[in-house]
Length: 281
Image: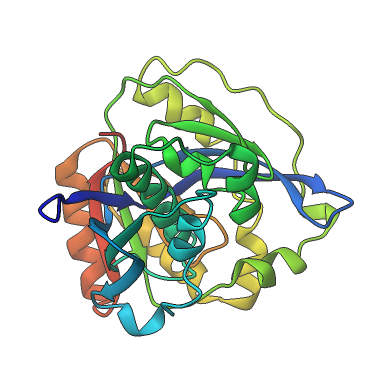
């Protein structure tokens, strides 16, 4: 029993576009976003144990509290559970960076604990209460995310696309950015067409935006500098900020173009976290 180990990567969540449709009476905002999960992220391992314990390693372990971690809160969603687990998180995804790191961690742990304990997943209603975007993180296919993040649908795409992600270390708290939003920043609901190839996806994305980008740039002008440098790279099809920032990304048709862009940006921003990956894999 003690030799059992379950493990998984906890992928980053990237908002290829992010529209804010309006503000609800409960204070939340209705969103519309196309979400992708490149094969980059934290690593999670789980072992059987008498109690539920969490250890954190990795370059960002000091920035992440253990006691109030979303992983431990997720483990408590299994009602009437008497099982335990030792959970090990190797943390590498930048924090408060627009990449959904905490929600992705929680989603992976829910799936692994369900398998380890051979019990059903908690209800979607309970999961949403823990984090509105956790449900979308439980499926790594290209998805459209609507509502407060709890309404998801899979989008078919067979093309090839590479992504370059860059985070300069700025922390852009989601709550702070949303507080600065006004109705002038909102978008209308749009229709998503069928994506037959890479060109059709890029054409669609160019008609969209990230409604949080202007607000974030006002408070963190360095975001604009990053985006300007993405545009300088050869082969960049589109550049944008993910989520509420501060991570920015560029999309490329060829891996060689993304790698060349990475080397260029590393020269300009040598202390940044920067990764290349296939956008759908």
